[in-house]
Length: 82
Image 1: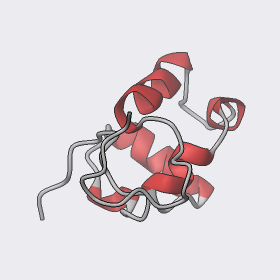
Image 2: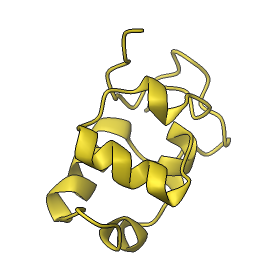
Image 3: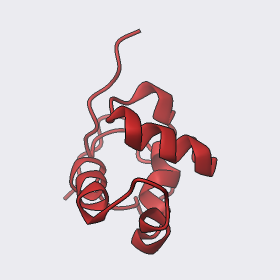
């Protein structure tokens, strides 16, 4: 199965298992119980920084690649950020 590139266009309900992230970061996310792109967008920077192996650069990476939380809870596939 090919993994999806992390972009702001990904729907909130996409499983994090389907998205290409560095392995170390992916393991840290799974350890928290985060399962979807939407939940990843909603978690605070402070909560991310409290994870093992997470640093400012890791948080910046996720914010840059996934974008902010959507306003309608589920960003439909193909919906562009304005």
